[in-house]
Length: 80
Image (cartoon, rainbow, N blue to C red; front, side, top):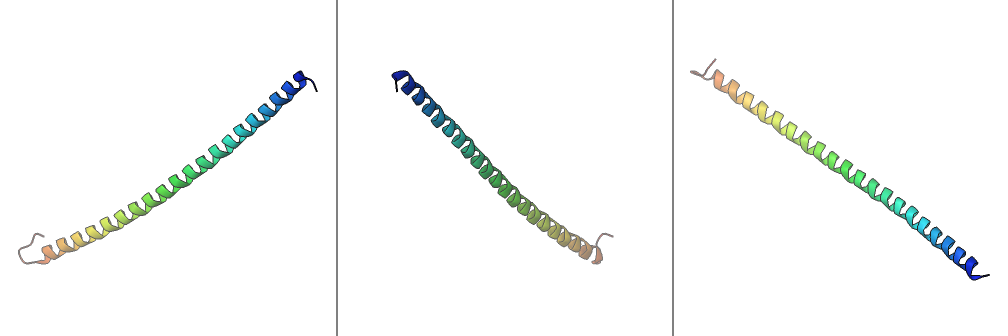
């Protein structure tokens, strides 16, 4: 095998390694993207839970306030 053939073979091997690195990079990018998506979904789930908890607390607070208003209205001298 002559020096030109060896150079060609080396170039082909280098291209193969580069192509493998590119593919590995794409796989890694996809894994990172999936991990980011999962993290976003987790955050969205946590935010939804927090919003549901806030809404529940808000409704409970309003219910208590309405009960207090009703009680005040029933008192003698209270507004009607």
